[in-house]
Length: 415
Image (cartoon, rainbow, N blue to C red):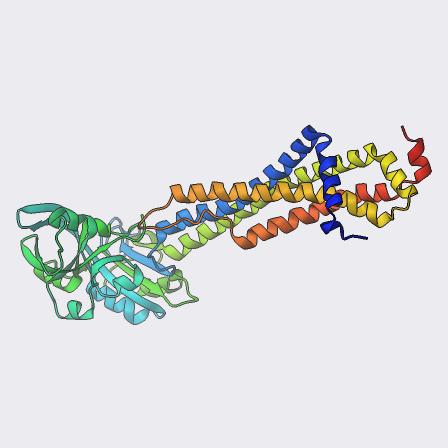
């Protein structure tokens, strides 16, 4: 006996059977098509939505924390509540001495002013950072270099400028090596940078001037105050783990009550990343349930149509049994019809979902931020195909067993 897969007559019979009632076959196939497409789009879409949100955090270390001064809410050591305190360089030294586990850190100064080159000038944010700042938040480097320790300790009058600011001041000219006037002081441009994501902390790099904080303090006579303290912790740690030590370090120089939590503000980026991951884990699970439910509804339709086909072909199957067809042949025939319908509809659904996701990914692509990855991964596509083929086999199994049990004499009596 020929292998059913290579038997052309077997394939013709499958086609003729499915074409016998085109409307019923189409509606059943559409149910599987739409269920598969829904599952694939929801699965790929959930990953894309997560990528869309996560790319807004591109460049930020996942173990990053930010400490900034607030107002006291508890009276302490003769000072009334509501006192505003300023973070200083000595506070940063105490934090680095007492807080174990900090991997990289930088004090950050924010100031505003006019930046000029030739006859062109622009109001801009002026930010002072330490060299480790770029280990905490990675920028896009369009040209030149970043600030380094030699710039910080050598009090060099060098500057990084944002891409947008560079375009406004220099147009199409190369700004590297040129001198810009920042609030009356000249700095040499050593790099053009930009933000790697939509999110920013303290300043938007594309529109700012970035200076070594030591140079900025001396050039503009800013004293020793610091706007905020950004840091990352070692792998396996959470920024919140070093918060008690940071509070102790701050209280060395400032009259802050040990229980006055609002007096010291903290942003924990690791917590934000966890929230995003947990949110989209839930979205992915929900998507799977919704898509799987739709797919199962389509598979049930396959089972129903195969049951009806077996009922309509009772006499034909009985005649086959009478002239010597084996039960195995009957089962293979019925299963083949169900699997062909399931496979064609399911593969079409996956192809449709892939095209939709590609279109969404193309529409949301950003030259700087990159792709959000609205796509159906190959492993996910294979999982979906495996599932609908298994379910399709199960849906056709019961009707095929019923067909196998048809007795020739009873089939000939059936009208």
